[in-house]
Each structure stands twice: as C-alpha cells, then as structure tokens.
Length: 161
Length: 89
Length: 120
Image 1 (cartoon, rainbow over the protein chains, first blue to last red):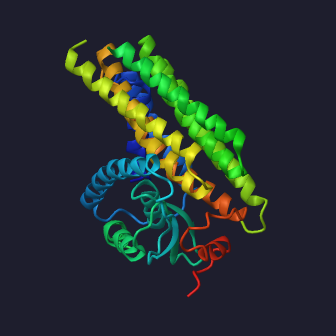
Image 2 (image 1 turned 60 degrees about the vertical axis):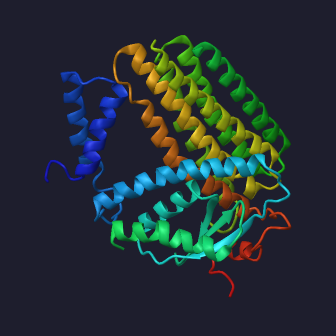
Image 3 (image 1 turned 30 degrees about the horizontal axis):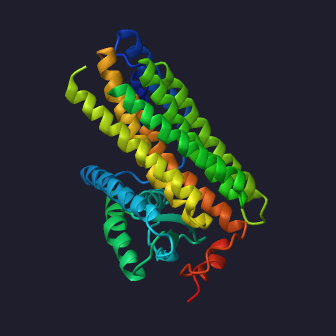
C-alpha cells in the first residue's frame, strides 16, 4: 500500500488516461502507470476522510437501478413538460434523513435530482432534513416514503453509515 | 439515411438553442439566465458531436470535452458568486 | 456501413435530439424558476446521453477501434448536472424568488433560506 495510497483512484486514473488517448500501446501504458502512482502520492494529504464502500455488489445493483430509473423518470418528466401546464401541481417537500456522512447525503441528493421528477434544493444545517422541489406532487407521504425506502436505505447499507 | 438524420437532429438542436436564447434574454431573474446558459452548453456539445459525425472525424471530441468541463465550472462559479452576495454563505 | 448499425445510430440520434428539444422547450415554457430547473437537468441529460452513444457507435465503426471515450463526457455530465441544478436552486432561494402561488409547502422556503429545520 506504500505505492498506492488511493488504489481506486489510481485504477481510475490509469483507465481514464488510456480512454482519453484511445490506445493501449506500451508507451501510453507506461505513462498511465506513472500518473497512477505519482498523482495519488501528490494529493493524498489533501483529501477529506470518506466512508468506504462496504457492499460493492449492492453498489453496482444500486447504480443499475438508478440508471433504469433515470430513463423512466426522464420519459415521465418529458410527458409532464409537453402536457398541459395548468394541471401541474408543484410543491416543496422536506424529507427527514438520518445519515452521518457528507458523501452519503451528496449521493442521495444527486440521485434525487436525477430521478423521480424532483430536484434537491437545500440541506438543513444539522444535516437532518433534505429539501426538495417536485414538479408534480400528488401525495407528499408517498413521495417521502418512496425516496426513503428506494434510495436512502440502500445508500445507508452501502456506506454503512 | 444517416446524413438526413443528422440534419434533422441538428435542426432540432438549433431550435432548442433559439429557445434557450429566448430564455436568456427574457430573464426574469439571474438564476434563469444561468440555467439558460447551462442548457445552452449542453446543446452545444450535442451540436459539435453531430458535426464531428457529419465530417466523419473524431477530432471534435476534445472540443466537446472542453466545453463540458468549462460549462460546469462556469455555472458553479457564477452561482457561487451570486450566493456570496448574500449574508448567508 | 451495415444497415442495422445505421438504423441503431439513427434511432439513438433521433431520441437524443427529441429529448434535447423537449428540455429546451420546457425551459422556455414552464412558469417559474423552480419548475424550469426540472427540464434541463432531466430531459437534456438523457438527450445528450443518446447523442453520445450514437457518436460512440459511429466513431467505433469508422475507426475500426472501440472508441469509448465518449462515455467520459456522459459520466461527467451525469455527475455534474445535479450539482449545477442544486447550486442554481440555492441561488434562486437566496435571491428570494417567489414560487408560483399554487405551489404546495411555500412555508418551507423561509426555513430553506436560513437552512433551518422545517416549522412544525
């Protein structure tokens, strides 16, 4: 671990460098390895502590589920946009969250922004409430329940926080 | 068939850009204008990629990547600047 | 170019262009800033993903090399779009822009601005 203080980031740097150059020739491999070792070594003191991913398989399943939801939600939102505006019932909702890590809250807020017709707007100071804006709000309770069970519970399990 | 599709999609994106420009001019608040710029750069990425496909060249990808990065950074910087104008950071 | 590949590229391009157009149409059409935020963050992201995947397939065919660097832009946009939307929403809230009258939960806007807990 002395050469790779951030193994995941090293792997990502290596892959992204090869992708950007679109080649797997020996010279590019050497250069990519060089970057994968030196850049994490230079920046390892600058980063904050984040919780580790405890359940990698659950994380992959979560990503696939979110991708499917993005497509479904996009079609729904597109239909809402093209449909009659007068029938839309926008609304603000406060969702109680109980997560301790910043990374978990960020992932949850980003997921909420990308998926079910909602945009996350603000987090309260003590990080216990997430404020969101919904484009079409039928049932407040159902929306809160859906976000808590469908998105928050897996994130808590993945990061173990 | 491919050339025709590219032309049709390019027309769609140009109409989208005109709608963004209308929102950029119309306003009414600064946030609307930032949002319009943000959408404009996404549409521009699509237009550049389409041109690259039309010419059959991969060179335009780098331009698209640069626009994506600069667009996000400028949106974040503009929002941050406007937020700092308030007492609450 | 084989016909089936051409059809796949054309369909992806058309879907992408349609979603980009719908996103911008919503931006011009919806009545207040909080509602306008929805259309570019969602519809435009899916639209650009469609165009990028089409470009990926076409360039891979043209260069006889699997060109997956377009995925970099897709990933970058998927990560940054919610962040940009969140910052614009914050700006709108801190500038005290009034939401539409029929919006539910308008009382929350004040506590949002001060980042307090919602009123009971």
